Image 1 (tube, helix red, strand yellow):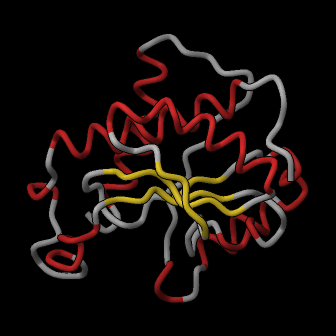
Image 2 (cartoon, rainbow, N blue to C red):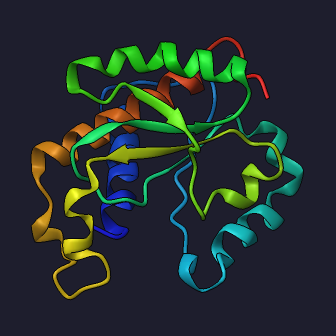
Length: 171
């Protein structure tokens, strides 16, 4: 669940888009970070390695709270971008994942957010998170298939629509 679930959900979101034959106007890149709890070396290395490309990064989405029942996303970015993201989130109403709150992102995407890239963090019902977090019980068999699939759908829809828009998210 921490954070194999988030990595698997991001991978599955892109796999689903490919299976459905969806080809957005912009690239969607899945990055699986390392070393969050011991210095954010993965996030810092990504920023350093891609500093000259960050103007082309439209949005970063992080999922590091488990893949429990999705409620929506936290968002950090301009007011104009927030309005667009809130419009996109209405597509997620049928699965209850349409909330857009403040303070989106996460530790791993923090380095590129500080360079101006808007960020989002998948928000889930975290009531069971610490049942598993950093314990021997933190294993894939705890994953609830319906909750996981709704997390995948949330990430896939948000990523695809943002990547396929005619305009970039305003910074």
